[in-house]
Length: 476
Image (cartoon, rainbow, N blue to C red; front, side, top):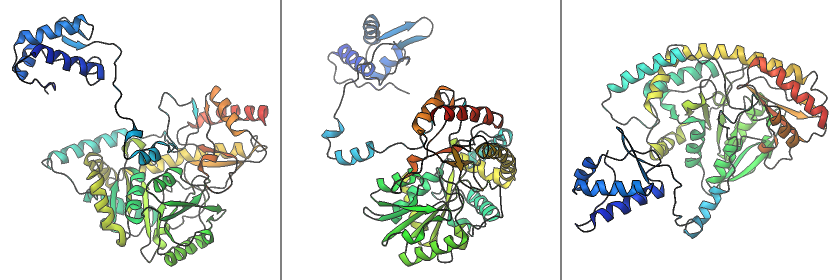
């Protein structure tokens, strides 16, 4: 790859080269440690004499911009970069739009591995016995398949092999009624929400969603110009009667309400579908972690109860496999399917095919179901330990919200607790705790904690909760 330097005319060649190299270093475009081309090669590239390049390198070395390493070459030296500030956002015509995005919070932003606590109750993260060997074999097979494609772009809706595998998986595990053509593969469930919102809502459209609810979804809808209305939930799920007139999109998590955890009752599901039909609204069913069910009989997915083509079913493999894979999907009703596919194509053309091929084989070979069964045993044990403590020595302060699925649970405060103080003091004893208040929108906040048990080892739960109990004793 050639170094980008532009020499104009035949005058002041050395000065032109010096100014461009120094400017690139000061601006940070040539980062510390970058190796410059040998003087002979750069001279050939620019059509100047080798002496011109050598003299320029020598001067920049003298000024400490470059450093020569014997037998290796010439490198950008470590020194403070002087970055020239350019136009600020306030000077631009799009300043108002920039301000809207820049002031959005970053909810559920996960800390880096280094920033996590020793005992971590963060939600969404998983630390499970991932079958690396099987995944490696599937990835190797994917590389062989990609070698045969000749370097062409793929379909925006996803590889046919993966869509077929997903259709079979969700039909088997969740009773979803779908064909391969109903499925669009996305970069995680968040992109699926984004694509559906793009084609369903316009600025000013009313979007109704559970309150408390999944904050990234709420911010996503609001960022696209929607008027988001928080609808309170009770023990049976979203209170359908409170969904306002004019609503065009309804977002729910019926299998495992986020963040409180209770499932939506069958009667409430029927009422929701009836209400959506009367409004002409699309319903997004976010079924983010329903593979992990611990009690009771399986419940139907909302999509499987839909006979009018109103429900868009959204799922993800971030919870069952690894968040880093960024693979999700949407099972779409006919009315919006083609529009979502076009939005996907315009957004990013298609999801990377390497993980798609690998996941298609991973599912078809039965590895996914085996992995879910292994993880189910692990998560069930962790859940049982947390519930035992919430029903035991933590019960004076906290009460678990009944939940039958997933790998997080909510605990509401039974007595006044300074939750921010508790969380801050927990950090000092290497425990990561997270509050419920950030998930509330219009509904009055219920004080409590959000216990994720995907990232904490089973044997670490009791020592961590011992520390939480001791802190509660001190501050509550």
